[in-house]
Image (cartoon, rainbow, N blue to C red):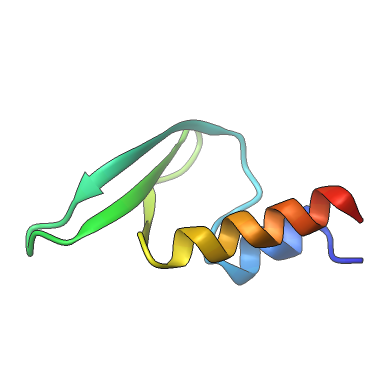
Length: 63
């Protein structure tokens, strides 16, 4: 069984409360998903990476 912290870390995200998750277009016109935190700088991931994160989170919650 993998911990939620590890799933987030493997996807480049800290284990912090998320204030906002929103679509974001980079300067190059590429769509990304932006994660905003109270205590840290916003981070973003590619739209292609998001389904993988969703699958990992689903498996984590059902283990």
